[in-house]
Figure 1 (tube, helix red, strand yellow):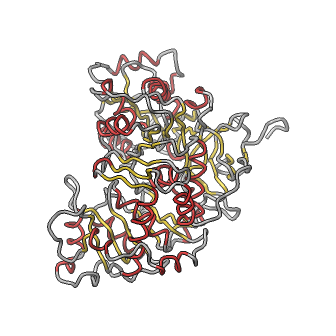
Figure 2: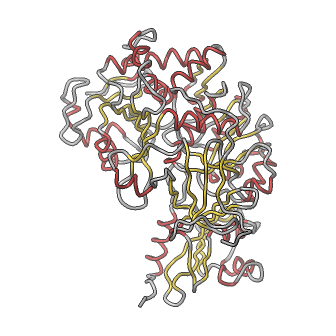
Figure 3: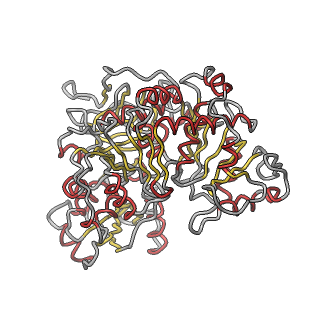
Length: 568
């Protein structure tokens, strides 16, 4: 590194202290400040809770947990889309030191069995069914003993640790053999139970409180284990960047089982006395627009694909979104043109971009409400308080100069305790100095703003030229007929790799491959022009909105019968 080059490493501010308390203690403090203020609105359930009401309901569930034989440190799974029961479980488990295990509603039998057995879940709280997903049916397929074993005394060969299944009944529906109704089970608890207070008094901020499974592209998911201190502080500082206050009402259509909904939604609100609003169980653009108008929401979260779906809804113009001010766009890189439309057409002048990963609770970098628009659309902001980030050469580990791409690493309070029961994978991800290696390629400018340019494994090397797909995507987004686009590298006998673009065209528009390539000519380097273009309806993605580029790559390799160039 030349002597004049500034290194790509920066430490976040520390003027506001970290919250050194448990989630339960922090929530109780907010309840004491504003007991009658609205804490939660679950629109699709017709439910509203004040802070005091939510506290009492959560304490009752915490008491029910203890009375069901669950102890601090035990694992309890939650397998559900968004609802009030989900957040009650989040608060209740935290009150009594039980580790909440978030299970993806998209999981099927083999994935469910792996998750439950990997961390040894003693209890599972689940939806009965949703649309075409029969959750209890899948569970019975794994554990037919549910049909005959006494309630709360399951002895399953396939799920040996699981003893109790509770289904979210909403106060209705026929009985389910072997499963407790959530409404009846919760009623067993007592909000004034002294045992809840006695257990809470033994807890520490560093105790594990949550396990989230990361969606790996190969092999089994890993259980990132997070503490009170991890997620409580991350929720607090994310809310600070959004300037949240009790006057704010945040619409949360992103899934609660993921950090985005659970931390950036629930905990950002609860640490600032704001109101959290769930528009629907799973994402529906119309439900979001209706909830924002009906509840006069001031904030809205989403991944770029969600904002695109809302903006392009045929009924978009009918809704009054003038109450909106802020929110977070995260989950995958935000197209510049989409950000501009969100600011202009959705009135979200203070929308922020957040970047992170489950293993870092999740946010490491975030733009602020006053970040200049050009920085907001071209970067993921600055490092969060009490955290450090650096960009290193993936081969040598040396910090690279500002402006040069390398692997982004994060250090500080947000780094997970580790992957559950997997020391080897933990040590691969977190080095001896506590730096979490993200696997993301990034650059840092002179002011410390970070830009994600891709995944290390997504970088395309064509004829010796390094190409970052994000750069090509950003250019293609500027075509007036392009609604969304993803670029990947595919094998090529001559150049090693070539670019392939999957393009979603705007409704009503017609676009040809030749027209798109002509648009690129003279505007970007010839080697960045995609060799292959496919027009598609959408992209393979996780339910959190992360694009699964490896599936795009696999599909093209299969379609084109591509083979890698021979190497010496």
